[in-house]
Length: 194
Ligand SMILES: C[S@@+](CC[C@H](N)C(=O)[O-])C[C@H]1O[C@@H](n2cnc3c(N)ncnc32)[C@H](O)[C@@H]1O
Image (tube, rainbow, N blue to C red; front, side, top):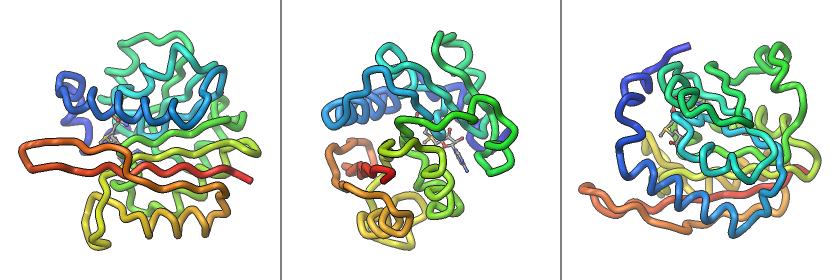
């Protein structure tokens, strides 16, 4: 499977902001959740910047991304408790993929949901892959402009979580990424599968 993200794969891990984003997201994750021994789905894992940080503490990770080039770089890291899938997540894939047969304690999506063609529908599919009381956590560029092509607003994320029946939802902006384009706040949202 390939997509337009293939072109970024070669230089993804050498971009210091990728590592910085993953480290900040990971820090916020462990501040909020005890990840020890969890089974995890890393949705839109890219080259595995976050997967790599999760790997030593969690039980196992299924890392999925439609960009085969991104997945190639993840696979080179040879993380012993990580299985990778290069494909788009769909009902059909879930039915046919053995590693998606068991539900997850935790699903993470780091800088992915803002790029999806149908965020709300994907959230519904992701929720169906969580165990009861399992957690979904996402990070995205925070945008208050609903027509922006990348970021998500707190309002849209909250509505999507409520519409999909997530409970104990929190949505906030715990860190900022600084770049030549200025300061970009990052949204973090957590929801529990009741
Ligand atoms: C900004 S990168 C983030 C990668 C990684 N999570 C990280 O933090 O480094 C966005 C990723 O989303 C993936 N992506 C794009 N469209 C997707 C889709 N429809 N479903 C799942 N992942 C998608 C891309 O292939 C890319 O690897």
